[in-house]
Amino acid sequence: MSADLPARVTDIWVYLSAGPLLWLTLTLLAYALADFIAFKAGRNPLASPVAMSTAILVTLLVATGTSYETYFAGAQFIHFLLGPATVALAVPLYRNLPRVRAALLPMGAALLAGSVTAIVLAVLIAGVLGAPRDILASLAPKSVTTPIAMSLAEALGGIPTLAAVLVLITGIFGGSVVTPLMNSLGITDPQARGFAAGLAAHGIGTARAFQVNSVAGAFAGIAMSLNGALTAMILPLLAHMWGP
Image (cartoon, rainbow, N blue to C red; front, top):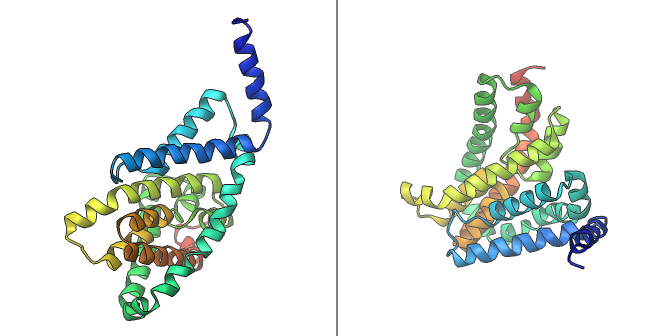
C-alpha cells in the first residue's frame, strides 16, 4: 500500500495538471499566502506579496517540471484581468479630479521627465554594456504595466515575455524602496509620493501607495495610467535613437 502511494500521488498530479484550473487556483493561493505573510509583517515594504508569490510559483514550476506554456494556459485569466484593472483606474482619477486640476502643471512636468528618464537611462546603460537590440526593446518599456510593455516590446522587435519579467522586477524593486526612499528624502506630500510610485513602479507601486495612503494610491494610479499612454506614444520615436 505504502509502496503504491508515490505512484498514486504522481497519477493524481498528472490528472490535475492537465486541467487549466490547477495553476489558476495555485496562483490565487500563492498570492493569498504571500499577502497573509505581508500582513503579519506589518506591510513592511520588503515583504512584497508579489515577490513572495512569484517565488512560490517559480519553486512549484521548477519542482514539478511544468513549462511556462502549461502554467499560462491556466493562469491566463489573471493576465486578462490586467487590462480591465488598468482601465478601472479611471475611477480614482474621477474622484480626485479637483486635486488633479490643481496640480496639472507639475504633474505634466513630472510625467514627461519621469517617462523619458525611465526609458533613456535603461536603454543607455544596457547599450553601453553591449546589450543587443531585442534586449533593449524589451527593457525600454519596463516602467509601464505588463500588457502595454509586452505590446510595445513586440512592436519594437523585442521579446514580450522578457519585457513582462523586467516589468515585474521593476515593480517589485520600486514597490519595496519607494516608502523608505521618500521618507529619507523628506517627501511627505501624498500626491507627490503616490505619483512618483505609480510613475516608476506601475501597478505594484500603485498597490503599495494605496496601502500607505488613499490619496497617494489615487495619484499613483493616475501616474501609472498616464505613463502607459505617454510611453506608448514616445517610445517608438525614441527607439530610433539606438538604430536598426
